[in-house]
Length: 99
Image (cartoon, rainbow, N blue to C red):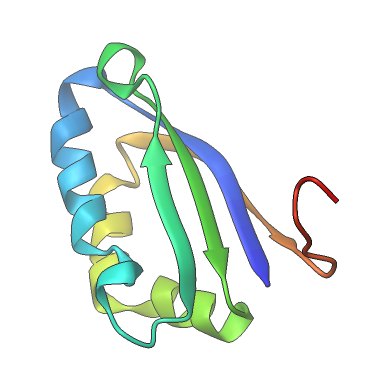
């Protein structure tokens, strides 16, 4: 499993437009995408800070998402208007939080 975590900073006045574009690329809306969860959240309308949390079945699924034309369009549109620190992590020992 691949975990993607991080944050994005954009101008607070552009949050609604950005989140609308993120919704377009949401892989949970595509059957068989390999995406287990996909979330953006935070105090974005005040500060422009958006937290990102994703879980992917495998690297192949994440790569397909990143290479998808809609994802590439979002990156191209927003790359000069956002600062992002988003990292991926390999998860090898998934288990219940209370174990």
